[in-house]
Length: 423
Image (cartoon, rainbow, N blue to C red):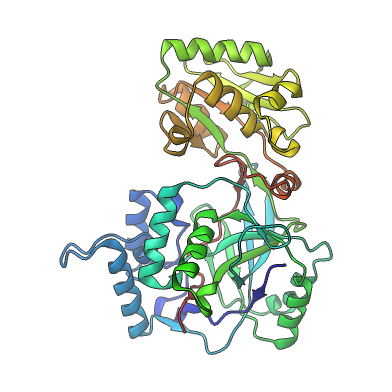
C-alpha cells in the first residue's frame, strides 16, 4: 500500500507575491518559449524561473545551477518560506473541459513515500522518454526539491478522504489562481490532527495510479536511490484525486503524421482498407469518436480533406498484432493505431515515435483538423477518450500505455507548493 503523509512544504509567502496568481505556471512540459517569456514577465518570482530555467549568461552558470541559486535567493529573501508544521492541502479546480462541460475536480496535495512500481503500491500507465527524465533529474539534484506535483489517482468510493478535508474548504482559501484556460484553482491548508488521521485511514490501503508526471516520479526514484539512506528525499510531492471523483475526466490526444513518402502513403491506404471498415462522415465535427466497445478512429488527410471513421474489422486483428500483450492493452485505440499504422504500415521505430520524428500530437479537435487542412501534416488520426476504468485495467495488467494515450484535464499548476528534499 502507498504511504501518504502531510508535508512541511516550501511555499510562496503570498503577502510578498500578492497571492499566487502571478507566480504559478503550467507544468514545464506544456510551456513553449513564448509562454515562458509571458509568465516570467508577470512576476520576477514566477516559478518558471526555477522549473524551466535558463542559464545565467552573466556568470556562465548552467541552467540547473542557476535554478538552485534563484530558489536559494528567494528563500533567503523570505519570498519562499518553510511551513512550521506538516499539513495536507485540499485543492478544488473549477474548469470547463475541451467538451464544453463545466466541472469541479477535488483532490489534495501531500507527500508520498517513493516505491518501486508494483501491485498494491504505485503503478504507471504510460511509457516514458529518456530525455525528460535526465532533465528533471539534473534539476532535482541542483534544487533538492520537488517543484511540481505528480498527479495520481486512488480508489475512494465513499469519498472518505475528501469528507475529512471538506470542512476546511468552507473557509476562505489560503490562495486561489485562475489559469490561462479559465480553470479556477482554490487551495486550503489543513493541520488538524483528526482530519489528517482520517485521510490516513481512508488511504491506508490505497494503490496509486500515476495520471500525469511519470517522468517526475521516475526522477524522484532515481534521486532517492542516489542519496541512499532515509530522509525526506524518500518522498515525492503528489496531488491525489479519487478515481470516483465526479470531476475527474480523461480526454484524448490525437495523432498526426507528416513527411510521408509515396510508398508510405500507399502502405497506409492498404493497411486501412485491410484492417478497418471505412465510412465517410458527413461533418468534420464527427471525427473524434466517442468511447465505444470496438476500436474506432477518426481519419482525415491533407489530400482529399474528407473525414472518415475507421472501425477495426475484428478484434483478432489487434490480438495478432500485439502478441503477448494483456487483453485490456489490446483494446486500446492508441495501441492498435501504433501497432497497425505507425509501426506497421509506416514502419516507425520506437525511437522515432519517442522523438516525434514524423509524428505530432494535438489535444484539441480543431487544432488537429487545422494542422491537416493547412498542410502542416499529411494526415490526422482522431482518438476516443479512454475511460478511467480502462486506464486502471491496463495498469493493473502490468502494461504501460503508448505515450500521450490520455489527457487528464485540467493540469495541476506548478508553484502551489514545493516539497523540500533536505531537512
